[in-house]
Amino acid sequence: MRKLETARITEAVRELVIEAACELEPDILEGLVRARDREESPLARDLLELLLVNADIASRERMPVCQDTGISVFFIEIGRDLKIEGDPEAAIQEGVGLGYREGYLRMSVCDPLTRKNTGSNIPAVIHTVPVAGDGLRILYLPKGCGSENMSSLRMLPPSAGPAGIVDFVCETVYAAGSNPCPPLVIGVGVGGTFEKAALLAKRSLFRPLGQPNPRSDAAELEKTILERLNREGQGVEGMGGSNTALAVHLEVFPTHIASLPVAVNIQCHAHRHKELVL
Ligand code: SF4
Image (cartoon, rainbow, N blue to C red; front, side, top):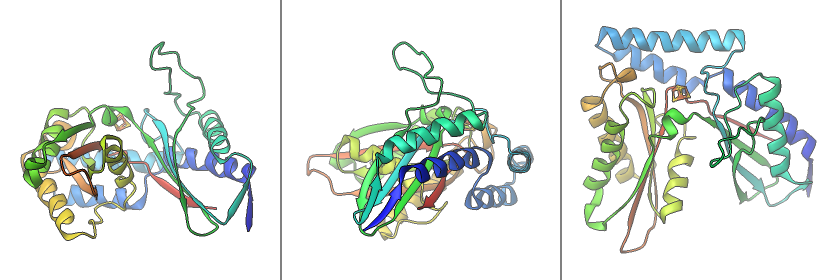
């Protein structure tokens, strides 16, 4: 059985946190370039160009892409044949605290009732899944809450069907307006239970930008929603144009015969997501 020390996890997460804050992934940069090149509104095109310039400066000068450096969200896949010496979640929390402090990233995490800042940006939200093999895969997303706050979940009646799903997702995005800093990435979770739908929506944000769901009916829904949003939506930063969203990622899971949960997790253009394998 392969062994892994928690010190390695802490150090890797520390670096990951700083890197993610300052550097957008190629799929997001390419998505913004494609949006700029197809945009017909001069104002929206200029705004998209500014977002690209901002991302370039952040990367070159090792500065955060956005002042909201987010609350840290992790999906951790731990191989069943991997023996971790110690507590992997504690190691991740320590790495987050170090990364935010040493990277001079804004501390945004507070107690929900007293609103007192924890002063370290921890605790991070960690979802751990056991998988086959002896590896450790860490998926990381610092989630800004201008976009997180615009997310929504509804328990639709099964009779709402695919049309009801499309309507609910689009209504959620229309209601959000410019608050989540479009152009957006829309994560949608359909099925399961109340909490499963929300997790599906969050997890879908880690998919490479615009990669369709392998299920053709789910991919068709992604396409329908994206086209409608970009035809009728508010556009870049709510200033019009045809790029309200860069992509829609929709995940499905079997549900109860009496239920149709749909969760919409909105992500902004500063879609900072990173992945590493130890
Ligand atoms: S929604 Fe995104 S781009 Fe807007 S302030 Fe928050 S992190 Fe920054």
